Image (cartoon, rainbow, N blue to C red; front, side, top):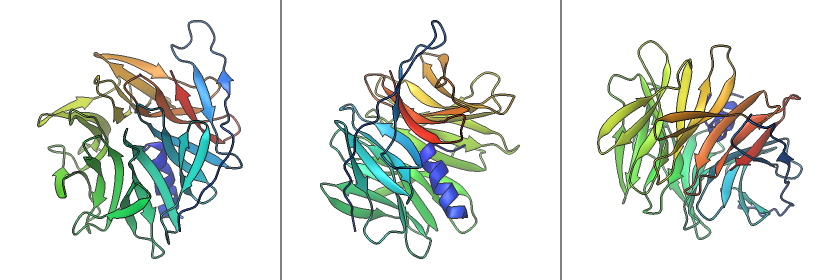
Amino acid sequence: MRQMTMFALRACSMLGGAFFVGAFVLTLVAIPSGASAFTFTTIDVPGAAFTGAGTINNRGQIVGTYFSGPHGFLLDKGTFTTIDVPGAASTFAAGINDRGQIVGAYFGVGGTEHGFLLDKGTFTTIDVPGATLTAAIMINNRGQIVGYFDVSGGTEHGFLLDEGTFTTIDVPGATSTTVFGINELGQIVGTYEDAGGTFHGFLLDKGTFTTIDVPGATFTEAEGINNRGQIVGTYTDAGGTEHGFLLDKGTFTTIDVPGATLTEANGINARGQIVGTYEDAGGTFHGFRAQ
């Protein structure tokens, strides 16, 4: 499954900015001894039927998406602010850097998907030339933006936008490539589909692609990377259950919110704080922060 923001985007594709303030819903989940290395905090936009957390920056600011709507949100010091691209039918906030610049995607009234940059209150549309859809997923402090785009043939490609220039990112031999994360070193993570239809995570560092597969997984997706090179993402086990993971110095650690039916890890900051989304036993999706 895509990063939770992307899950919401896909759901919407198949089927004036606003301001909202609410209480930060803090639910500390008790972790049985030895069961997890993390302490989890649930993130729910008040009144929302669905909340998904996409990214956390080094200041602890979190962006994501909530329903009904859908709408993007920024969570900063306990206050939620709704993010809506003016005139858009739906808005999804995906990435934020330490300067508070936010990227994401929106659907216009005609159903076309565009990327956007929100900087100091001003929205700028991001469209890869010739693409039928574009989504901006992450931005680093240098202003480099990554995401994905489709062309008329329906093939998905990653992109890097740097000082106004788009560079296509395709894993060699892959049938599709999606980019989700970039850090200050320019290291990029994402996922690709091979010729056999299997999805793998990848790291792109100084022009070299390295495949990331959680041992025993049938699906692996790398979604976020911090400046320490720690990578988070999602994998599916042999039984079909989705789990989050942390990859640190070659070691994989599973991330599961206790009691959840699925967990997805989407972003990680330099402090090692991780955000993502989980589904509870009742089928409701919530954001989370783990540390």
